[in-house]
Image (cartoon, rainbow, N blue to C red; front, side, top):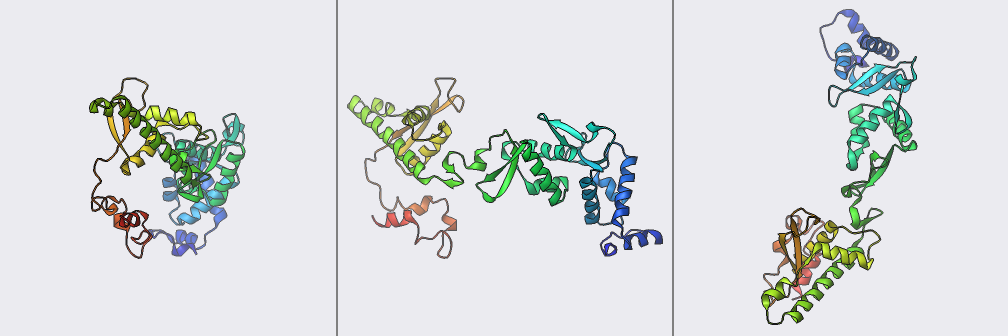
Length: 334
């Protein structure tokens, strides 16, 4: 019963009787009466102070029922950020219960959910976060989201971080790469072969440039070195011309591939002032060149454990173990 959950307050015997004999229909009626006293809408704080003898669950349940019966509207406060209002629905005016969004008519509840989704931008918003902010029941929220989806106002997008969960964003929005995985993911699966091919092609282009510089300047080490550099803009243009990818790769995509070559010790990078205003990254430009070791490094220096980013997570009974590490096994073969 509600009496064991209600907050203890100095009340008269009549109030105590109301708490022990909770009537949901009576609560709904009292909420409607309260909404009539506040034409601009009532907040959760006002409702909490007005109905101290009922639990939050009982109050939310009554509000959800009134929303489902279209007796009240859920609105976002224009003066208080993150605050929602419950307002009596105007049954005498069509504009009081519906709003046009993108040429499509929506009710006030859909409008509130739509605004939350809109504010999330290209990152989207989880259903759990919408429910927390609006305090709508799961059934009503599901119905509202499906209605907005059918009107093509919002869409659900699967995240690579949680394949069984969806984030909601505006229908016309392009999801952020952090949600879809960007260029390196297809159908939420990492394209390892595609990355390997790009890695090889970038290394090949830089090796060819190095060979050209050696032939062109055999007796000038300074010019031989500087002419071997290629910019990331130059590399992305050549890669796109090859037609390796079905989508147009960006400078950021190629630079992420080039970074893996740097970590492998195959190329080096330098940053110079850009000579053009169109170069991505502002006034700086990244240049890369292939490197050939003059002397073979000591096996001790090449130990992968010293630069391993997951060294702290590597142990015998974990997901990452010395026994299964391909880098360590390769190093032991020297």
